[in-house]
Length: 211
Image (cartoon, rainbow, N blue to C red):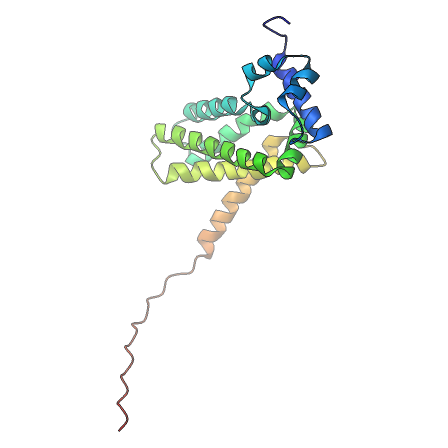
């Protein structure tokens, strides 16, 4: 085969997903994936470090998109709103990949190894968002809190998008999740009871010894 294969990465990804669904993730090998795609194992390792990374290969692009969107947000925008804009910027990436995302989600549910890797990916995205906020002058803990809350909203919104029978846009679920988060924090502020002064605790009176 020639050194460069047309759309090799996409062919490998499609082959891997098909085999994961047919044989199971744990019983699929890199050799199987390369053969299904009509490529060599050497070509596989040019694009992926192992079969697991086939499911997480787009993380770097998401990192760049988050950091760029946060950096370009108008000055004076609240940190959580800046993160919200970055999350909505990610929605078009998944627009035509809902079926693929649903198949991928089923694999995450079935295999603990993949769930662990997904958590690492989300933590990395939150770290990237927090770093970009700090570059804008947002101090701690506000930068980390806004970033972590935003990624939590994205995770929930993404799962709801996959389950949505109306197949509404992912951005709509992200906005709904952010609105729900803001409503929760607002209700906590209004429901917080006024602190009452604590009454001093009187020391217990010692009992006289019995004679």
